[in-house]
Amino acid sequence: MANPASKRLFKEYRGLSSDPPEGITAGPVTEDDMFLWEALIQGPEGTPFEGGIFPAELKFPKDYPLAPPTMRFTCEMWHPNVYQNGTVCISILHPPGDDPNHYEHASERWSPIQSVEKILISVMSMLAEPNDESPANVDAARMWRERRKEYERIVRENVRKGLGL
Amino acid sequence: MAEQTVNIPQTLVFLILFLLAIRWYFSKPTPGTTSSTGTRATTPTINRGVRINPAQVENVAQMFPNASRRDIMWDLQRNGGNVTATVERLVEGRGLDTPPQSFQPPTLRTSNPISRATAPLSKPAHPDLITRYNLSSKISAEPSSSIPESNVPKKAWSADKNERQQMLQRRRDDMILAARRKLEEKEKAR
Image (cartoon, rainbow over all chains, first blue to last red; front, side, top):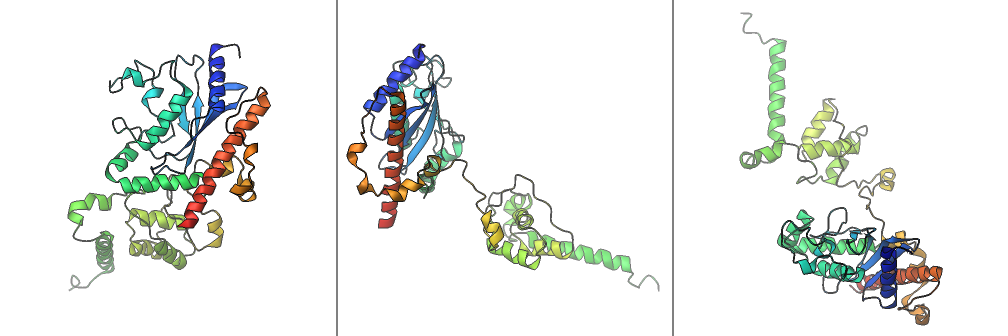
């Protein structure tokens, strides 16, 4: 627990356990490795994701919190901002200055004052409101735009599948 | 007049041409659309557009028990679901092409009990949460009312590392089981 990254992660873990945000459970897979976390995110209500529980893994760099973690859903996830392999593409996970398209404000991007909790809450609201500007999954984005019914059907099906129904 | 007699090679050539013409005619989806979507109809579109009818596959498989269903599907997939063409191929003993490894039959539901065991070809890349966390025993064992609420501290932190780990796991399991029950009830209510 000597290095600052582990210390910081431990502190965040304590915060998330003592006062967990609604619909979020997160913590290290094992405390022996504070750099690999697992999170469960509940699907936001009033969206096709409602009722679902979506697992994801967070990998933290050794220089956390200077650099952001990466986040990857470990379930079927059909969403414009999630790559086919589950990797989440959202501005808070992008380091500042790493924005070739300049469509993200610096304030939305990663900085050491952000936290795991803020990431998970951002991802939760991303589920509710996809960002159409920079789709990670082009097919899902197109379907979301043009065939919303079909998109919602796939999402609902994944909700059921994820819970073993 | 030796020229007038029809000789065997000529007849054969004529027959082959005739057969090819019929095949060509049948392999067109509909005569009307060929001009506009001609390229789409002739180039093999893999897993796109063409939906294989399982009943057709079954029909062909019953006529030719030796042909594998996978091969039949591959042939139907490529000729646009044209059963006649596939049957013709088999009747003429030309056999069917072996599909490439990457070919995933979109519908592999057969009435064959042996292949049913292996039917879930579209196996999900990720196991569901119940399987992943080994919760199947808890689904039926704990109806929502019997969980003593006091045992499930929602906000919890312990000084002991193992205890912390257990509490995290407990919170995770509860979250999944609660969602599962809720969804089950919702589906029952429908």
